[in-house]
Length: 415
Image 1 (cartoon, helix red, strand yellow):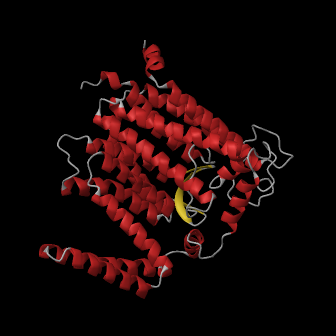
Image 2: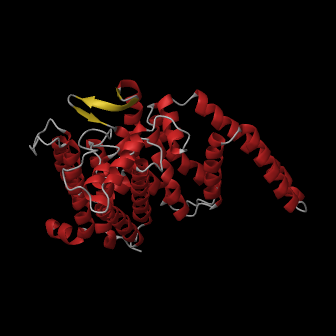
Image 3: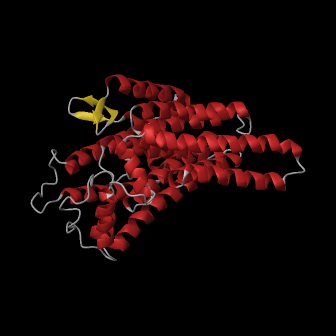
């Protein structure tokens, strides 16, 4: 009876898209490693062999997620959250450093990255808190608590040196807006991003003059509203201080590799070999690509981190514009399917969790592909279900399958 209930309640279209993406991701990893000689599919010493093992583990874990009662995720949301936070804290003490980031825990020959698992843990905690009776994001106290749920893992992950994984949690702002947060926060984020970019592109003095002139113009327009003047002056001073802080932090706190990546994105030069080779590989694919396993830029190691950060290059070179379009169609098709599933939920917890899944996946897809074509800094964000990495595919699977379980039990929720 239980098996029949599971088979009839699960959203098989979403699972089909998931399986298709995972299979295409594995094929891309195999192609990224293919050197014209190696042909063993089940070579567990290679990335594609290890990824196949993690794919099977993820499918097994996904099945377990589906057979567990959905009340488990609502009841133990905070327990899961604090458990992962302790794990993140533990990484700072006994973690293993890889490529400058102390963000891994080693278990024999197996390495896991707790920051990946923090995504579904934070999503559960956010959904649990925002679905609590009486929580209104238009009030200050709920806003502070909601932001605190995000800032704790962000702080731990930044201390590990993994800035890219930390900023993923900023995407929960989209969920907060969906649940009633004032659009003024969105305006504030846009202003902060704009000031940050201008601070890195423009002379500090020129920018201060611009802030003063804009403030004077706004002050003239609002000259009859005397009560607004102190706030306007305060914003101008804060903006000026922020511009100075951005410039100072960029020069004195960021590592050279991080400064290079930001400078490349802003067109200011720097070590842009990775991005240039990535764009050459994708561009060389043309309309229909060079054919599977026939990539030259990718096969001869011109593109670094090919199985992880730049996996989309393999798709672009070997399958061209049409193949890339199909991959994007599937990825964004999954996103729209998740939004559709979220909107049909009876439970506020399930709806919020669903939008959290969509926000996380959207951020990863946009930033990863943006990295490969030079529109985003290279910050080590994996492409969901494509990039090599056990922690990545396992965490994305759990993230998605929890939503599928909540959706499968939606009819049992009383309105």
